[in-house]
Figure (tube, rainbow, N blue to C red):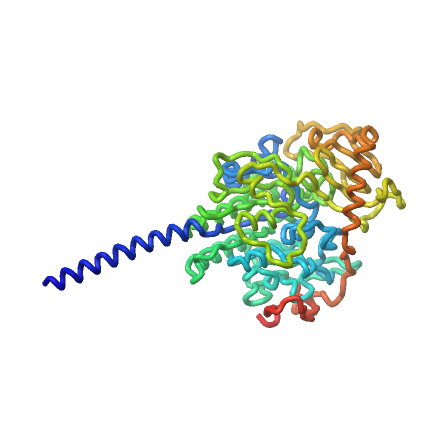
Length: 537
């Protein structure tokens, strides 16, 4: 009897101490646990197309869920991206300006043997080495002409989406013009199985959020559930073609402009997709340890329903409407005392070092020199940013309005732009220079034509006081012009050769079973690890 009581006592002490020790270990683990990072990128999403901006600027776009996240987090009110798709994505992934990767001109087209160079150790590779599980869904657009450029060979453990710049939302068909020819094929791949078209007829917004939910559920049930997750959800929305999402056809009947009406439905559908994503994270008990970042890739395309009012220009231009982006950060790991609007200068190239800092991950030895700055303190604590300058671009291939025109050592016929402190300098042709009001706002003030700066090769704006670029002041401040031109000279001296090869017939999907696939399969010796091919999956 005494032995039995002693045995029970020892068992009780063992269980109690083990339980207490387990609790202490769990607390230590929980305290040391790295945050999950979910980065959602919208495509061609205009400055005036998110609710918290639209309310002030008489737009009828509705994004109730995105607004709720932004207003409980940090709204980035002085946030810059690049004017078009591939350049923004390359800077996000590499942390480098375009002049240092060669991708300064245009976007990467399907038939081009072009891609973000392999000498860049990109963000998912860095996070994977730090113990993260890495997944990508949606638009890649960083090149795929060889297997080694595919997203699952560049750090993502899984990929599900399309490789080029756009596709039909329902059929996944994508066409690229090559002079008088059009190359068309299906652009949809799963890194586990290769090219696929078994999702024909499903709206991509629904398809991608469904895959995201599966990834989250699988992560929760996997052996590595304690590992942090990096999910890059690169949405197709709201890039063209304009196509109504299912069950939204009766919304926004009050908007009479047909393009704007369809665009509004696509925006609301995107908002609901993000809500489903967050609900899945909450259900998996991952949300409280998630840093959630939302960003556009460039300004809105006003020819396809987007709007950037009251900013000047649109997608593809160096005006503020092309490069000042929608962005915000949300999440408990921010440790905010209260939500706020951050008005410090932040650029898309900053996400690379910022995410590495937020996750307490060391940047891999041998990583390329970064142009981005660590903005984690500026975002989470509202500390003063280290960034005072942004090189928007220098593009020597862009069509010039004049012959070579040198000033202070820089050819001002070249398309370029730089933001430094309070000033913004533009040279060459910045693109369409109008202010496009929201179609649904009939009484909007239209800025006088006199504000437009004709065909000048040099334009200067005090952007801190004139964010709408109404008053061009280059003649009033020639010394500022010369100072900023000298900075362009310095940047240009560090640039690498431009990558913009001619398109090739070998890329034609007809030659690859009707799919957009790599067409050069020589292996790179850059890394020793096995690199999976489409044809080996």
